[in-house]
Amino acid sequence: MGKLRHNYKNLKIWKIGLEICNDMSDILQNFPKHEKYDLSSQMNRCSISIPSNIAEGSARTDKSFSYFLDISLGSSFELGTQLLVSKYRNYINTEQLDLFEKKLSEFQRMTMSFQNGLDK
Image 1 (cartoon, rainbow, N blue to C red):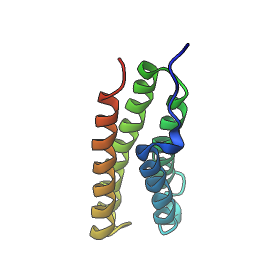
Image 2 (image 1 turned 45 degrees about the vertical axis):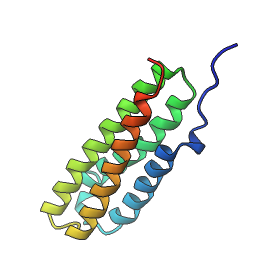
Image 3 (image 1 turned 180 degrees about the vertical axis):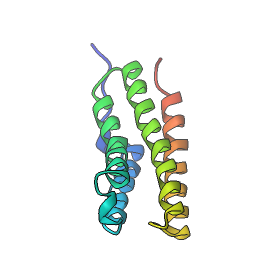
Image 4 (image 1 turned 90 degrees about the vertical axis):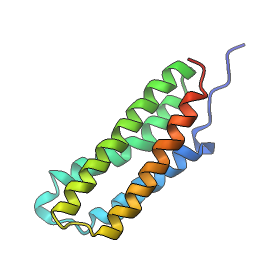
């Protein structure tokens, strides 16, 4: 009998990833129109990648799931850099940056901890 797969909808890391994704969607509404196909598009793809890769990986073996968690983590770090660029360009304020950085940091810490508990 094969090992049971994870139900991503019950995973706290997926829920936080979804929150990040939804918060990002709200923030991007206020970005300048000329960024629509550049920075904001990249940030949107990154934020969607975070919960999406958790969901996709959850249907696989733990070893394979770990790989998808790596992709999700990579997207979260990429998004962190894009948020700094956004702050530098004055598209977001310090308070927004701080909130996102806290949530991304929490996501990264929890995901790495979860990943360490998987069978490798």
